[in-house]
Image (tube, rainbow, N blue to C red):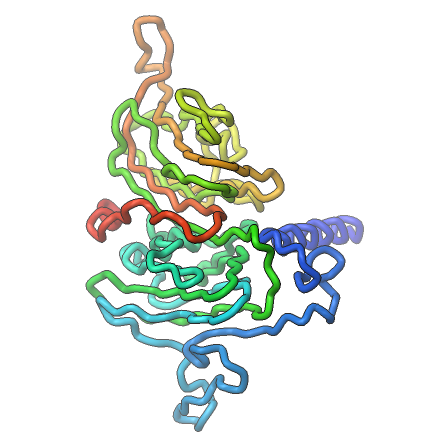
Amino acid sequence: MKTQKRSCLLSVFAGVLILAGLSACKSEQQPVGNQIFDLGTGLVSRSASFENPTGEPGEGGQTASNLGVGRKGFPAKNIEAGETVILCDIPGSGTIRHIWMTGGFKDKPTALRSMVVRAYWENQEHPSIECPLGDFMGSSHGRVDAYQSAVHSTGINAALNIWLPMPFMEHAKITLSNEGGEDITLFYQVDYTIGDRHPETLGRLHVCFVRENPTTLTEDFEILPKRTGKGRFLGTVLGIRTLEDHWWGEGEIKIYMDGDEKFPTICGTGSEDYVCLSYGMQQTPYFYHGCSRNQDGFISMYRWHIPDPIYWQQECRITIQQIGWSPDKRDQTGHPLYERQDDWSSATFWYEPVPSAPLPEFPDLQCRLADL
């Protein structure tokens, strides 16, 4: 039993070290590997919340409650319909290392699809991250299931966490917009360091959200619209709502990169195979891959390319086929594969330099909320 516990702890510790190195900041200040216990990094720790929105030293917890000044006076805020709040606005060089949120999200799918996260790096006018809150935090369809992966951890009462490093050189700004029709309570905390010395080849985190409801017959669903320049694909949170009976997941992922045209360099073998499962979909969340929901025709699954990186040097585009399998739909040759349509969404994560091209057109509120 002691050996099993020790093995489990070592596995968790190894995962933490891998995540710490994701931003590829190979400087003396970056606490990775054995440097996790180095106290000479020079990094300064900060945290932004409603109790200290600027993250400045000695500025937290000043609002008064009925218990007095500094006694839990401003832990949460009611975000009104149509309101945008600034979660952090950080000058200089640094790395956002963790974001936590909770609030009036539990059992409210429309809330998690109405709230939109947008992040702006280095004073770029258009966002590098634009995604519904739920999908950005690892939960498709606005439904929260308790699970843990290398990127996300969620609590059963809608506690949302993301752990991906978000490095920046000059400026970072993250906003949250309530684009729905009802007010929503929000608690949050953004944990970051300042003073990081990043390499000139630094990639900034980008996230886009795409939904097709339904997909187009015989056309592949586009997980990552074409990006040019260098980049690293981190992975995706995929949401599927099945629109017909039979098995939906025979479609192969296709990663077109650096000059690929008709055929891709990286080609998968099936939808459940892409998230490293097999023979259908099982609700089995693992560290780098798995399925966090498989209920009533709603599937939320994910894949993180952290120990198995996918880099491109010139361009990249990623799609997944819409192919089903059914013995009742055999064609004239007797083969059970067939083209089908379902409701697909994706929150896709990657690193690329800035300035970067605008993200694909963001689905409007009606599109995001339909059929939840």
